[in-house]
Image (cartoon, rainbow, N blue to C red):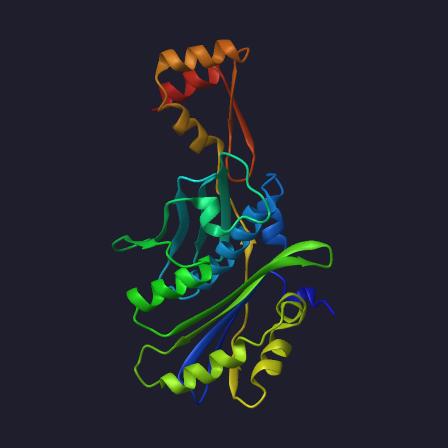
Length: 288
């Protein structure tokens, strides 16, 4: 059974008698849209899927308008993996690969020496950035460590990527003890043990409420209305033009000559092409 109505949805839920909250998300079309314009190795696809799930779960914890960027920077063949999501659950992702990446490669073999950077940028207020050492085997464990250190809240993340009904899929759950101090570590551990029994086919294929019932049928769980998730890049001709104006005039002239009078500013995230000829660039300069 594949319940498509819960694809690309985020659910929040609350355990009434446990002072623990949870989130569940499944990315289907939003994940496919992210991968469509790129030919990433399978290992990179899987990592981006994990990071997209994690970012979606993180943005759901925001109590303000703004966005979160989760990125990995390293000196291995995977130089950059970046996901950005906002409080409207609009998400985008990209990776930069320089070298060969095989399916068998571990996270650390792909990244080499690197860090995980989480940037929280509210529309109003101060920007916060946390830098985390990648000293755990998986991105999930690194993020759990981040929660333990930065928020000092018991947190469990379950993130899976794979294929379901012939399409890439990424799904996951977050459990977190409530910050009011009323939750007990025993309650959290009990629920976390149950969550860990979730199977891939349940995360990838079941309706959210059915899956939660299977895991927690002896608990009282309040499930809130879901939030839709969509791939959204946000690129535009205006932004590409502004980036183009940062290039020195002499270099622009060289590029125009080399490419027969037209500069192609391709969006690294979604693959959209924006073309600028000499007249368009002149017009941009006169408008600034």
